Amino acid sequence: MMDIPGLLAQPLTRAGAIPLHRQIYERVRRAVLQGQLAPGQRVASARALASQLGLARGTVDTAYAQLSVEGWLEPLGQKGTRVSLDVRRTAVRAPAAREPRIAPRDDGLPSPPLPFQMGMPAFDAFPRKLWASIGARRVRAVGIDDLAYPDPRGSPRLRRAIAAYLLLSRGVDCDPDQVFVTAGHRASLDLVLRLLVRPGERVCIEDPYYPAALELVRGAGARAGFVPVDGDGLRVDRLVARHGDARLALVTPAHQAPLGVSMTLARRMALLAWAGANEAWILEDDYDSEFRYVGAPLPALRSADPAGRVLYAGSFSKVLHPGLGLAYLVVPASQVRAFTQHVARSGNGCSTLQQALVADFMELGHFPRHIRKMRMLYARRRQWLVEALQAAFGSQVQVDLQAGGMHLLARFPRHGADAELADKAQARGLAAQALSRRSSGTHAGQGLLLGFTNIGSQDEAHALASRLRSALGNAASTGPARGARTGARAARRERGVSR
Image 1 (cartoon, rainbow, N blue to C red):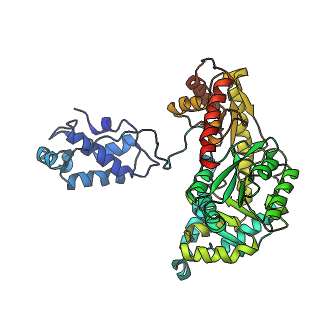
Image 2 (cartoon, rainbow, N blue to C red):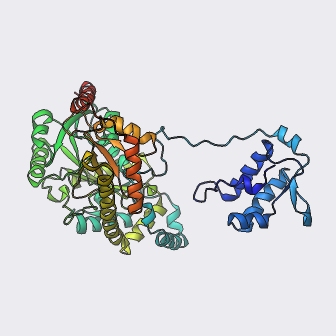
Image 3 (cartoon, helix red, strand yellow):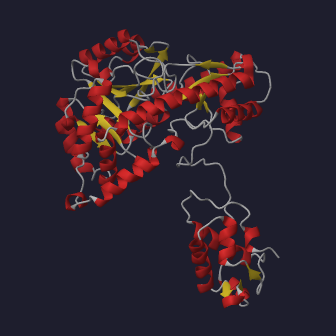
């Protein structure tokens, strides 16, 4: 029969949601039910088990105490501990628990970052000790006012900190009353769609696009109008020619999602002119704007808005961590009253503690320092991945390097359609995404979108590139025609729904 240390040969999950003592309890209980531990069998002492597992003895004592109370184990004083002799009747009463199986997530729910996963900041580089220290001080300072319902617009202190940061870093001159704190970027977009767009009106979306934006637009009952993006950003001439009557345009001018290109000054001015002339709105998603590796970050489109037609959306998910669930929206002065009335009717606001933590982090000067640190780190990690891809694939890969961002676009023209490549990579646990699945046509071409922010070393980058090479295989492509057919089918599907 196996003893408890053998049952715990598979490492315990130290960073998971289930406490260590509960994991020990579950494994011992399951072993008794399945006959791996027999009635009367002696088990390792709490002291010995704690020493072997490198745990505090109190952790094992807690597990053993629960097992003893429920009748699975029987303490014998100085003689040690054994499996209860009465365990057979206990086993009849208790249903057997099966070992949970780990399977790929396909339900759209959050999961730990996978290799190449996009949109995830570097968790290993987040200043957790500093964050915990600030959080501890904040919790100790909680007063009576902090226990009341929060301001649905967001904490006044955080809104002031955001306004000050945007003025210095993005050239956005706004009053704190124009800033609304939301529960994430999707919440910001949903708020804009509810207040500024009526069902049936057209909303212009960059093509290729951010999938969640398309889902929200269609969920609001609006019609999506796709506008192609090239090396200079959004094709404003196409927007005017095809969708000039649109009510709203969703754009990422600093760093287009997902191509990574920046919108030129000429096109920015043309877009602002269109919005002013047609009394349309522009929602500027300042996606990844802080992480630019060539020159200084570009100013926001909102900073050049003379007619007050641009709403500016930012998020703390990419620059701090997504667990915060906090974003912000800057609205034109003409819309402050309408947005204020709506949020007062529709919600209770975001967590006051989370908002206070972020406000402290910004007011103490840590926020810009953290961004500078991440910018240098991401530049290095991006270079590691580029070099690793070139070493693994040689001339079979073409990497589209843009000035910034948290992912890169790698094209594999000899390996077939990118959707099939992405499926192969994901089957091997690699979170590569197909560019064609984010486009309504074929103008953007094909390629794999690969996040690099959580690649911790050069060795890890080369190991991941080798895994990707193994996943994709060496099969010859059927050529551009195959990819073109895939893109054409996608284009037909989108046109049938949105036009």
